[in-house]
Each structure stands twice: as C-alpha cells, then as structure tokens.
Length: 253
Image (cartoon, rainbow, N blue to C red; front, side, top):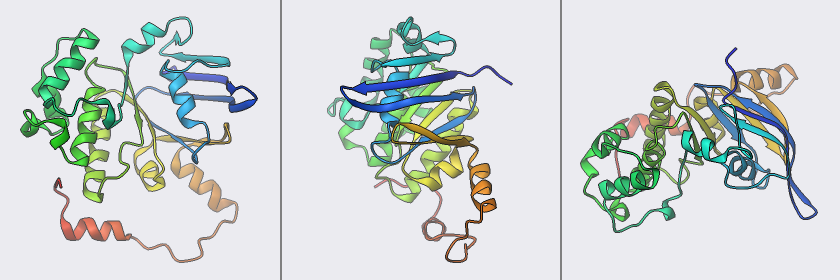
C-alpha cells in the first residue's frame, strides 16, 4: 500500500474548556478523493484548517507528504492548494488578472489560459469575477488551487448553492483533477455527492471519528445490520429526471 499523503494521529484542538477535536486519527492516500463528513459543529473545518497550517493544534501529530505541519509548515504550504470562498476575490478584476495576482503571490510562472481551459472558463478570461455565475465562480475558485501545481487540494463544500447541472459539471471537474494525479480532500453536506465522488469517507461527530471506509462498504455494513428503508428505492431520483429533461450540457445562469 502507498504511504499516506496525510497522516493524522490523535489530533486534538481546544478552545478554553471546549474541545472541538477529540483525538482524531485517519489517513488519506495519494490519488484518492477523500470526504470528511459530519454535521455542523462536528470539527471538520477545524481539522482541515489545522492540516492546511491555518490553525494551531492543541496536541497530536499531523504530517502532509511526510512533512510535519508544526515543524515545516512552509514545506506543506508549497504542495497544497486550498479553495478560497468567493469573498476572497477582488470582484472588479478579470480572471486573467486574478490568476496573475495569485501567481505572483506564489512566485509561480503560469499560463492563465491553460488554467482557465482546465476548468472550462477560457471564454470568460476577460470577464470580471463579479460577472460570473455561481457555477463559474466555483470553478474559478478551484482553478486558483491549481496555480502552484499542488499534489493535494482541499475543497470546502464546493457545490453549495449550485443548480443540479452546475453541480454535476463540478463533479466532473473534481474527478478530472483527481485523474491528473492530484489528491482531493472534500467536505460536503450532500451525501449523494460524497457517495458518488469519494473513494473513501470519514464521518466525524462532536470532534470524534465515528466511521471511515468506502461509501459502498459503509452502506453494506448498514444493510447487514438490519437497516431497511421505509420505502422502495427507485432506480432514479428527481434530480436525475431534472438533468434528463433539461440536458447534461453545461449551462450557466
């Protein structure tokens, strides 16, 4: 088995008397889409911010590609990409200007059009960020995580607020990033999204890990335990109907 690209061991984070993360341990392997799932307040964001070197831990150890986040945070930052929320962009700059700005911060030489091609935004190169639709903004946000050619990216609820078509097109983008060799860690509140996208998921609640496995195995374990749905599961859902009737092609508002 490959060595883990992320290794979290007995991670804790306290805010005064409140313990947000309670002895969390898990591993993420190269080339997978890994989902960190849990209800609001479960400790997901705190955990990711610690791994991303954006927040200090209370105790435990975390390594990213062999680098200890506490001893060598600069080395970690060089090999990861972190998705910014849309509020993190200058709305009056066009996409090429924004990419050049971020490339300067990373001290990287880039081909802005190639990056825009990778997220299907070439035709919006001269558009200002504020002029983009919700799906376009999210795709551009993901594009900025690729500027420093990371081996690992973190996506925090990337499809929240998107319509079904934009959401599924973003799934295709995330898969293509993984297929290019970049490991993806994602948080989402959409369980269908996690089931479809993720190779493995970790479910946390109240700061503790309560399950980790492939989506299929977690579902099989639930069924083996005697779980039954109250109604027959159909071969399609309403979202499938919507996509079928309105088309799979990318359509922006």
